[in-house]
Length: 183
Image (cartoon, rainbow, N blue to C red; front, side, top):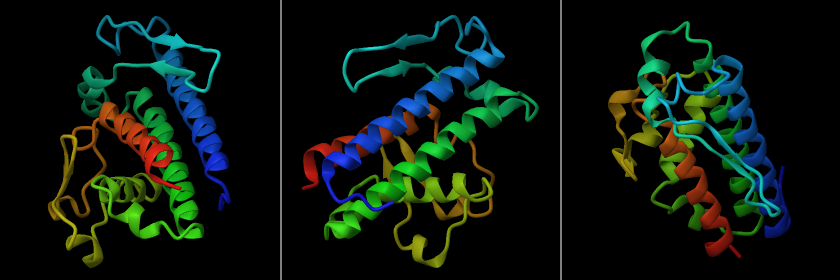
């Protein structure tokens, strides 16, 4: 999945983000048709605009207790799958583009890079944090209120460690990096 132009990478990013937010909204609607139970009286707002900023406004910050308290809550696996698909796609596409355009060093120097990479690895494999020796030299790693430490090794993924709204902010930060910093 190597993109030869920044425009193609951004188009893929936009398509992935729309698919991600649509799937996330669908997961919420499947379990809570009126969206009030999960989102604590904050209704889900679907914003369909005429441009590439089409998206879904979701406040998942208050849903962490619900997501983490009962492993049988049907929404939790669906939300994890949405984040997993987005994290894998966006990390891999950006990495491939940066490699093909000799900007890999710049990508890996971003303050959020290790947060994105380790989260992608955790979500994309077995939902466990796997902190290898190579990773430990970059830890602890902190970005925007998320801190990953070597103590996470072999622990299950938790939205308490990486809240859904922070993952969405991370995806937005990667997009800003692509639009503004990359050539």
